[in-house]
Length: 82
Image (cartoon, rainbow, N blue to C red):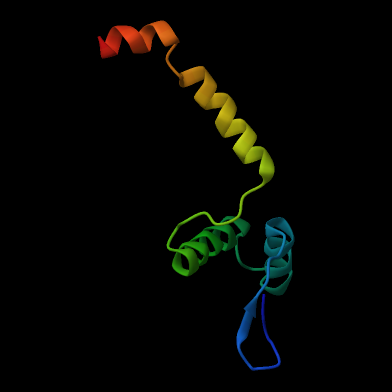
């Protein structure tokens, strides 16, 4: 959702993804919801270059948990570095 501030510059906001898909499906009822989802992903990549800028906080927690599992034990590091 883009608005303009008082200087006329675009202001980019955030919308709930599922709500956006629902609104678009209501506006374009003949469009397959999976096609709406596909287009939304393509638009996201076009706007961001595919880079993640904002993620839910639990993504960091989950990433840390997986890194802990993947991290070599201290003994493994010493053997590889010897």
